[in-house]
Structures are given as structure tokens and as C-alpha cells.
Amino acid sequence: MVESAEELFRFVHDELRQLSEEGCDTWELERRATLMKEEGGADQLKRVQALCDAVASLKPSPDFPYDEPSELDEIRARRPDGPRHIAVSLSDEKLDDRTLGAWLGRAAGCMLGKPVEGWRKDKIDDLLEVCGLEELTDYLPSPPENNRGVEFHEGAGRLLRGHIVRAERDDDTDYTIVGLCILEQHGREFTPRQVAEFWLSHLPFRCTYTAERVAYQNFVNGIWPPASATYRNPYREWIGAQIRADAFGYACPGRPEEAAGLAFRDACASHVKNGIYGEMWVAAMLAAALVADDVEKVIGIGLSEVPKNSRLAEAIGKVLSWREEGLSAGQATDRILEEYGRYHGVHTINNAAIVAMALLWGEKDYSRTVGLAVRAGLDTDCNGATTGSVLGAMTGAGNIPPHWTDPLNDRMGTVVAGQSDLTISGLAARTRRVQGNS
Image 1 (cartoon, rainbow, N blue to C red):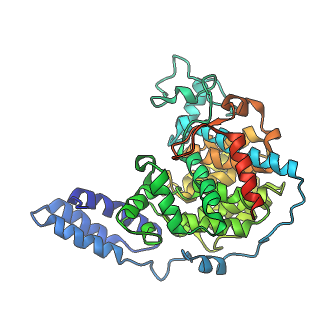
Image 2 (spheres, one colour):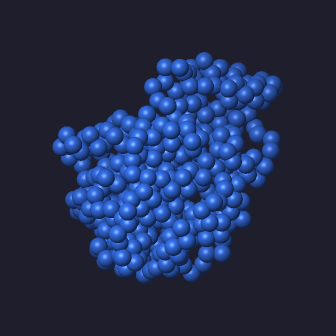
Image 3 (cartoon, rainbow, N blue to C red):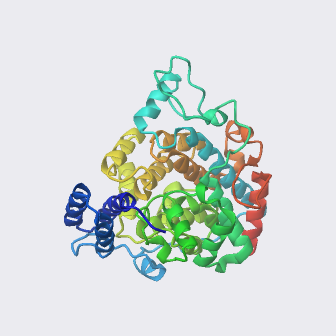
């Protein structure tokens, strides 16, 4: 594929930002890119291609304070101590309920965040004010006529209270279905190459985004994992892998190390470093949540599967410390948005911190937990889905208030090929069979 100079300049801009976050000194190449773009010239394309090669050679500075590998053995060598296996003492009926709760919790949390995806916290606060709401404890209502210009995107009507008839299609649930299908087809020994091939045969290209779209394009061009995660992929630490974790956590109740290992094999097809850690953290949390009852313990078990000297571990550790210091949920949210505002709104680190905050300050109350996650802004559907999934796994379907689950009518939309007329209870039953195959 021949790329234009404009496309390459856009890539260089995004890639230099990513490399700077990874600890590289990008100042000189940023200066060269600016001058090259201003100068133009007949040979500009050739020169910017050479610039791309120079960008690809950058390495983190020796004084970068984090240690962030992308290989599983190196990740595990740098993780803290943790329970790699938790004794399961749940009855089949209880595990049925928790597995269904995880699916329902994910679906409902996603639906809450979907109408305001990408909004800033202040815009969501304005919406609540015009709707006369102090907190988010139910699906969003249609705003009144005098809404002061706070409007949803076109097509959001079916996502609002009173208009919901199912869990609508979203990549946050598409990938949960994809993960389940991969486990059903290939078992627990699936490879990153099989992940790539499943995407090519079951996911429409235009229903992939950021890192996944780049990786998909790389697959088409014969660039397979792990190179597919790094070639021309400036989104490799964004949230895409983190939202793909759930099926791997669901498959491993009480086995956080195994869940994180499965998540790694999925994540490395499109992500590196903290992008991988986000998926491993969530998968390990879910494996623990299916058999545990303490939110802080579950978050800690998740952290025990990622490098302790990583930016992700540092961010979540700060959220845990703010809880100990007695900050309010609002104060903790403000600190997250201030300290991690340098990251893109769909980066792993800032959104993972929001997930941790909502789980901690939600006090095991489903409505409060997903409400805090979504009200913080940024990637609201992802964060609502992940917090809803973890809490649903921990408390079970029977403890999710029916005003969240009844409107879904046990139905879930998806674009995954071959997966039509899905019921949420059916997906949970399939997940239980995968658990039983361990």
C-alpha cells in the first residue's frame, strides 16, 4: 500500500507522542518533522519515509524510571508476589449466578456509558444537571427541551431509558464474544496467530478501531503477531486490549495467573507494554472476582500479574493510596484527570485508574460503581462495561438491580460473524462450559 506524505506525517505525529510516553527523547525528530512539513518539495514523500525509519529506531532513555517489557516471561519476572491460584469453594449454582452476573454487568455498564462515549466529565455533569440528576443510578434519560445545548450523538435514542430493548452492539461486547469463541474453537492453548486469523474471518474491518484496526491491516498485509502490534501502530498502549480481557477472566475462576496468560496471548497481537498489562490486569481481576468478595483484594490480585515498576501499576497504586487517605470519589476522579490528562482519552492508563476508582468508591453497589465509572468521562462505555463486569462477577446476577437488567430482555447484538440471535444467558452458559473444560 502506497501512503501519502500527509498520512505519513500524521503517523509520525502520533508515533512521536507514543514514543515520548514510552520514555524516548523525541525533541529532535519533532523539530525535523515540523520543518519538513513546512518546507514541502517534490521529494517530501521520500524524506518523510526516511523520517519514519528514524522514528522506528528510537529507544527509551536510560534514565526512564519504569521497567516495561512486552514478553510474558519478562512480565512475570517483574510482577510482585500474588496468589496465582485461589481455592474455589462455590457451588455450581453460585458460579452460574456469578458468571451470568459478569455478562449482565458488562452489558448494562456498557449501555450506560455508550451515549456519552468520549465526553469530558464537565459535559456529563452538565447533562445530569439539565436532567435534574445528582448521580448516575440508572440508564440516562432523554434530556428536557431546554437542555442548554447538551445533546447526544445521532442514533443514541435506543440507548436511553425507556427505549432500550437489548444490549446493543459495541466493540466492548463484540470482543468478549470473540474471546469466548476463540476458547471454544481452540481451547486454552490458542496462539496469537489464531487470534489474528479469527479477527480476519469474523470481524468487519470497519468495526475495529485504533490499535485493532492497525493490527488488522497488518494481518491483511502478512504482518503477524507480535510484529503486528508495533508496525506503524502508535495506538499500541491504548485501551483496545483492556476491553478484550473479559472472556479470558471468565474462563478461569480462581486462577488469575492463567487468566492473565490467556489475556497476554490475545493482547500481544495488537499491543505492547501497558496496553498488554491492562488486559492482563482486568482478566486476573475477573478470575479473582468470580470467587472472591473483597474489591481491594481483587484489584491487588490483578496488579500481581503485571510488572510492579510499570506506569499502569503506579497509577492504580496511587488510586489505592488515595482511598486510604480518605479522599472522596470526586476528589479521586479529579486527581486522575489531572495527573493523567496527558494521555489520550482512550489510553489504557487513565481509564484503568478510573476503573479502579469506581470499584473502590462504589462500595460493591452496582449502580454507584458503574455510575462513578461513567461520570468520570473519557472512554465511558469501556469503563462502565469493565466495572460492571467485575462487580457482576463478584456479586452475581441476583444482586444487579432489575432496572439495569430487565430492559436488556436477555438479548445482545453483535457484528461477530456466525453469532446471531444471542442471549446473555446463553453466552453465560457457553462460558460455564468453557470453565468446565479447564
